[in-house]
Image (cartoon, rainbow, N blue to C red):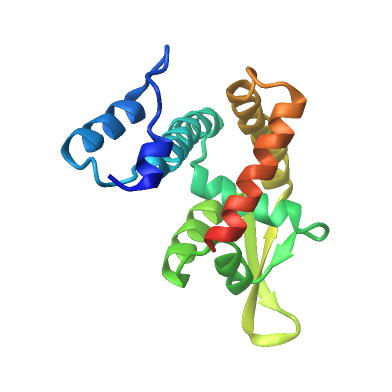
Amino acid sequence: MNDRAQHDSPAPAAEDDAVDAIRAQWNAVRPDLDVSPMGVFGRIYRISKAVGDAVEKAYNKHGISRGEFDVIATLRRSGEPYTLSPRQLSATLMLTTGGMTGRLDKLERAGLLERRPDPHDRRGLQVTLTQAGFDLVETTVVAGLEVQYEALAGFSPEETAQLTGLLRRLLADAG
């Protein structure tokens, strides 16, 4: 067994969870491995999935998916005149142009955005949030935040700030 595995092996907690069970199984069959990172990343994945699913349900109550929310929210937070090119949207949302076109088509049919020729580029388009899209994103952003606040309800503001800082550092180091 390596030194890290011996040092990082958790003592049984009063409230073991599914991630602890997975780590214990790995420790039993591969005691030579330090599986402590699974404690962090397994929980990050499970939290992201659970909260993401709850946010998706909150958006669905307003008639849109999370992906559709992402598009109209990106336009909203871009500031007035709430206009971006499809390429800018694709880059921000890390979508292919084909994936973006499908979302834009659906949102345009719903009256939440409109596409117009770019006055500065005859070959380009601009995507603009409509008033209906603006109103919807104003409501749905609050609904999504309520889910996130509820998920963090067990933490003090100081703990939330500390967690934010640690995750920021982890993200910076990972990428």
